[in-house]
Length: 93
Image (cartoon, rainbow, N blue to C red; front, side, top):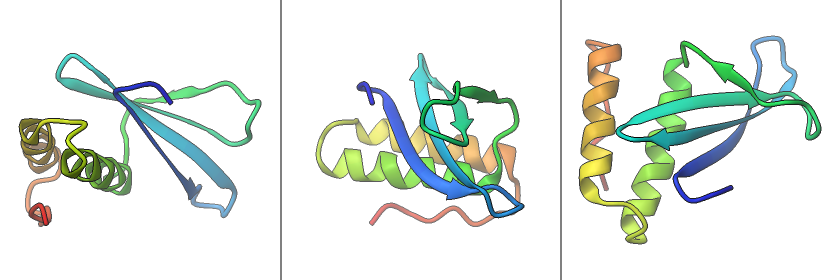
């Protein structure tokens, strides 16, 4: 993955494996996923809460390693709060 991209693996609702990544473009994050290694990356227009939390985990790790700025994590937390009001977003550790 290139700089500004964070990837993870998870499962679809029906149990199939899934590869996903988020790419930072400006101050926005764009999400993509695919089922198998050689499939094309498909954009995810409305990422689920779990995808946002995986992204936040990756951003927090990169902030800790000084690959991203703490402001990036703060902006991402604010975005998650805007998209999912009433959901508790964990504080950085």
